[in-house]
Amino acid sequence: MSVRLPGASKPATAMAALSLPPLPHRSPAPASSPLQSTSASVSLKRLCKEGDLRQALRLLAARAQPPREHYGWVLDLVAARRAAAEGRQVHAHALATGSLDEDDDGFLATKLVFMYGRCGRVDDARRLFDGMSARTVFSWNALVGSYLSFGSAVEAVRVFRAMRASAAPGSTPDGCTLALVLKACGVEGDRCCGHEVHGLAVKSGLDKSTLVANALIGMYAKCGMLDSALRVFDWLQDGRDVAPWNSVITGWCRMGGHWKPWSCSEGCRAPDSV
Image 1 (cartoon, rainbow, N blue to C red):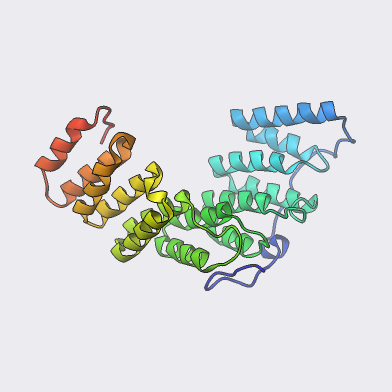
Image 2 (cartoon, helix red, strand yellow; image 1 turned 180 degrees about the vertical axis):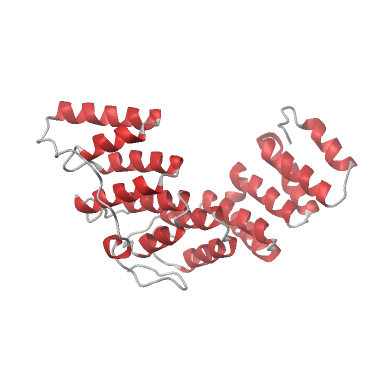
């Protein structure tokens, strides 16, 4: 049973939720041999890697029933380009071929949620997410990231809380989830939520992840809790990259500090422009 988020619209199919234009394409190619299929896969993957979206769309449209990974490659490129119009066309094509109807594990729908989020179409991402019958941690992360990227940190935290409240498979937060939510806490200056997420990270062992530790430093620094940021910073030691150094130094500067960040920066061997 799908879990709806607070304030979400009723679950609906993607076709009902979105008005999509058709994907311009050639007539579907006749059934191909395994060798031809392999060649097409290699070609499409190469086009996506090279960033040739136009030709990738043409090759995708030439197949009557593209494999799901083909949609995934193209949608990743669409997301990187933030090409919303092309993304809606790929969505329409996936509906027309029945690929979304066969998306039992949510792989393709998750790719679409991520794509819409990266393109700034958060409402479309949300409607598609609400219509998913099967969600994974990647689906949740895609929606949390969508809200966070486009100025709705509060909504990102709400999605996280709905994720934790869900008993459905795939709703256990991972390191990426916690890093995203910690960033949202920093944006909002929400110390209570930040402490809550830190506690969850410790309980699950995810606080040992460099990704989560960096996010903790950033959150505490933005919330003005420099002592807490430095405790995590000191623990991180060899796992430090430029990001935690910048967070600590920026935090101290905001608080009017001078000497401590300067002494800390002596250990930063590869400073960036900050």
